[in-house]
Structures are given as structure tokens and as C-alpha cells.
Amino acid sequence: MPDHTSNGMQCHEFDLLLTDMLDGVLGGAQLDAFQAHARSCSVCGPLLAEVEAGRNWLKGLTEVEPPAGLVNNILASTTGVDSQRLRVNVAAQPQFSWWERVQAWISGAMQPVWATVRQPRFAMSFGMAFFSLSVALSMLGVKPADLRQISLRPAAIRHTFYNTQARIVRYYDNIRLVYELQAAASKIRRNVRPAEPGPAKPKEHKNDTTEQPEQKQERNYSQSDHQFLLAGAPLGPSVVYPLNQDLPVVSVTTYRRFV
Amino acid sequence: MLVRRCVAGDAAAWEEIVRTYNRRIYNICYRFAGSASDAEDLTQEVFIKMYRTLSSYDSSKGAFVTWVTTITRNLLVDHFRKTKQDRLTDSIDAPVSAQEDAQPLSEQIQDQSAPPDQRVRSREVGESVHAALSKLSPELREAVILRDLQDFDYREIATVLKVPEGTVKSRINRGRAELARLLQRTYRQVM
Image: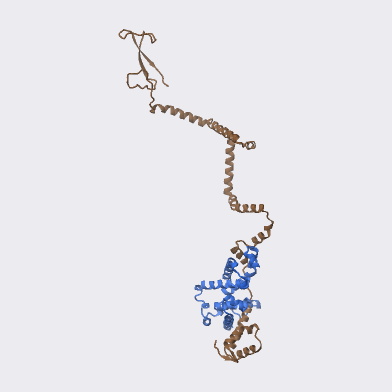
């Protein structure tokens, strides 16, 4: 803005008083000098008209309405809750007792779990698990009516445990299939055992001074044991025959069965 | 009082603050940024920043509305700087004197010769003024918005903009004059 004096007022003074003049706070001699400068100055005169026009344009602008969800969005982004929920909580908070608050907290904490559990696939799984458990309990002889008379004393629990264990073992042993399998297994074991080299058991060899290797007895029906007996010799330890005496010798073969 | 309650953790007090000031802040952002979507985002940012820094408000240093407007203005300046690259062809970055070569507003507004009725004409005039406002430099724009649209006094504007009152008055005068020149040229071309 050119700074020259016209009617006792410089252009920069005119510029400073322009807002006051438009606001209506300028009066007296100052207003006269201002108006005189505006009429005589080729720069400040049009400037006054433009500023006044511009202000009128701006005054014609109306306020715009904010978007409908702006307040809720702001509250959600600052406090984390929307307006409706906030209002409900503020109004209802004094009416809750501590027990209701605990329940509300628990239900709030369990809500994700319940939401998962309520899904059809989980519901079906729980149903099948319950069915399987009930079938297993009924097979074991557990009846719901028995649970009422159950004693929780340690001795009673121990007694129940041993009883149940014995019952299970009996039940298992009495199954026909198990019995047949056990019989077959014992038979196989009996047949296989002779072929296995058994542990060398020390045997008592009383009155044996020959130091000869021990003859093994084969455990089969064809094993023969040849003993030479004197046919006429009476049984009994007190009878002694001289070795050079001729006595009839009879060969006897005995068959023994070793089991 | 409301601020003190809010700082103490009263959520209802914060909601009251939001309801009281959201319209004003949204309008400032809308007139400065020029678009409704930007204004909505900026308004939310203003309140988020306000929520975080509410405890730093000192009532002895000024009115709450001045503090809120200062936060808004600072965020608008940041936004203007961030989006500067997006407006390389926009004349808003150019000096005020260079805006004479800007794209005429007649290309952005429809023919004004035969408005169907006064209401439509008023709306179209409002749109053309809004478009002209966005052509002003940010310094002039914020000054006229605060003065002519938000009715702040010069001292409050000086506090918000952190410039002397004389500078505020000068910017307001230049802003108004520039706006009038843009609109006069527009309507002269249309008619």
C-alpha cells in the first residue's frame, strides 16, 4: 500500500482504522478524516469498497451442519464408548449393587467364551461328549441315584476305589474274548518254552564223585533210561553181593514221562 | 468447571464439551480445508488432541474457546503443510498478488443468469464464496474465518494466531478485499 498523506491521514493509518470503521466504533474527527481520505485517495477509496463487499459476502455465509455421526465418532475415538452407551452407563451406574457389578463383569468377561460355545459345531461337540460320558458311566455301573448316597469320607472313597477296581478287573477277566486270548497265549507259551535255553540251575549231585559231565534228560516221551538190575537181587540196602558172583542179569527199559 | 470435571474423569462432562464445541470446530475446519470429509477428520483430530491435553488448559491464560480454537488452528496449519504437495497446482501457495492469474471461479460455478428461485441462488452464492475463500492464502483465510464467520474479537484472534492485533486487522482487510475481487471478477465473467 502506498503510504501518502491525504486530508491529514496516511494510508497505513487508514488501513488500521478500516476495521474499526466497519465495526462502527470509529467516530468524531477520526471518522471525518477517515471518510475524507477515502474520498480523496485513489488506493484507499476502492480498498474500502472492496473490504466492505468482502465482509458482506462472508457475512452471507451460513453455518454448515456437521455430519450426524460426528459426535459419536468423536466420543468413540476419545473415550472408546459411543454416546448412547455412555448415557446409559451414567444413568444406571448408581442403581447397581456390588454383587450386580461383579455379575456384570463376569458376564462381560465370559461373553466371548459364550459366543464361541453357542456356535453349532461346538454345541454338537459338547453334546457328543456328554453322550459318550453317560454311556461310559452306564457301562461302568454308575447310576445317578447312587451319587446321592455317596460318602466322601477318605476311607469310604478308598473302599469305593478298590471295589470299583476289582469290579473292573472281574469284568475284564470274564469277557469271553479275553479269556480265549489268555488261553491261547498260555498254550503258545507252553509250546515255545522247551526250545528256549533255560537258565542253568545247579543240581545237587549227592555221592557223585565221577566228575563226569551230567547227562541231560531230554523231555520227550521217547527217552529211555537203561538200568541194569540184578534179577534175583532182593531190594534193600543191607544185601551185599560179591562182584565176582554170577547172577542173572535182566535188562529193563522204563519209560518215564517228564512233565 | 466443565473442564475440571472432565479432567477428574467425568465422561458426561467430556460429552458436553464435545456437543458444545463440535459445530464451531467443524465449521472452522470446513471453511479452512474446503471439503467436508477433511473437515470431519480434522474435527476428530482436534477433539482427540484436546482430550489428551485437557489437563494443560489454564483458565487464567484465556478463555476455553480461545484455547480450543488455538488447537484447531495449529492442527489446520499442520494439515496445510502436510497437504502442500497435493496442491502444487493450487494458487493458494502463491502470494496474494499472484492470485490474479488463478483459475477463474466461473469454471467452478454454474450459470447464475437464471436461478430457479432465491433459495437455490443463495446456496450457489454460498458455494461460490466458499470456493473463493479457499483461494485465499492461509494467513488471510484464517483471519477472516475467525473474524467474520466465528465472530472472534481482534484480541482473541491475535492470541490464536500469535501475531499483534495490528497484523490481525491488516490481514482481515486484505482477506476481505481479496475475496471481493475474486467474486467480482467471477460474476463479471459469468454475466
